[in-house]
Length: 72
Image 1: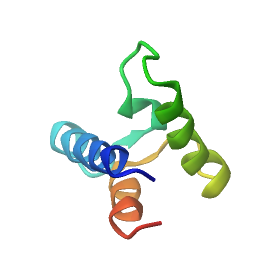
Image 2 (image 1 turned 90 degrees about the vertical axis):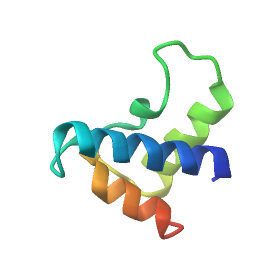
Image 3 (image 1 turned 180 degrees about the vertical axis):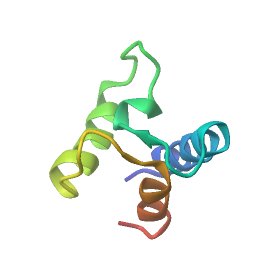
């Protein structure tokens, strides 16, 4: 996973946890604007989320942040 995506995921997870608490869930779409302006990056996130880790559509933000920080 490229560094820019890793940083964006951590940033969004931190923001969501501050706004809604430790129990907040999100999907990989949370890391992107409603407009698909970077298909390659979106597919990279989707591949990591769906194919590599077989995650559910919604996962806890704290779980995703920990996975990314631990290099998974």
